Image 1 (cartoon, rainbow, N blue to C red):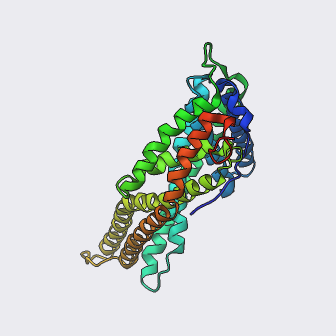
Image 2: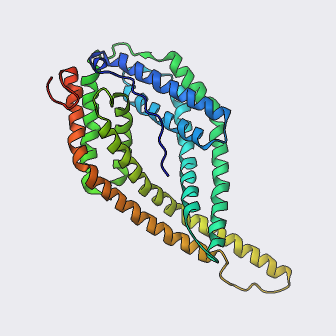
Image 3: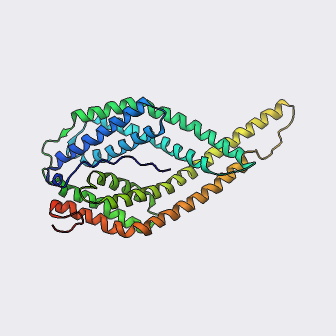
Length: 329
């Protein structure tokens, strides 16, 4: 399941020449304001799936920049903890949301629908519980974001180098292993997904200024493709426990019923078994299709990223002395 959220361009080529701490404050102000805006919408409509998704993405974006700018900007620790707590609680909610959506799209018939429906009900119950726990952390998270927005300031003695030069080093620190890991799929899938997400959020404020919307699009497509494989793996890891719990409950019900009737239990395969088996096969198919999509993305975007990611590093290092294609003006 893939969604898109608005991407805000906030920097120009001139900003690359400004002191790094000043630009970090500009970006953090925008990202934290985005958290407050999306969080307020979620607070107003807590049952809206899009509101939760957009708040979760806003928090991820903010945390990437909080980590990058940590050596330069003083942020209250309590504010960082509140954002981290919300991000941690949002993980299971997002996973269950994706699993429910995927399971709803699995086409089963006849006997197989019993197990399919039982699994859907179990996931829905867990999703509701985790979502409620996440929403409980929302007020503290919003308070933390507001506190960070009001109190953040440059650290004494913060580096006065240009943002472009500072950013170029951090960009290539992420881009170099990303390009290397692209050649080691599927083994390097997980780190590639995490670094790709970081690169995407680093590039968003600069994409228009650097004329790098094409690179941003390829990163986003890769994030979607890699995320699909990861989602299949997360459900595959959780499915045995879900199936075991459902089967155990059915056996327990059968034993109680038999004993109440004065009979010894008859060990028969529960009616949900065909559905659980069919879902398992569908999940294997999904993983195969997801891996094929990753390889398709690598073939279609690999060359563009191999050229585009280093080009951005050159642009950042050279700042306004280069045009949008990394060429001298």
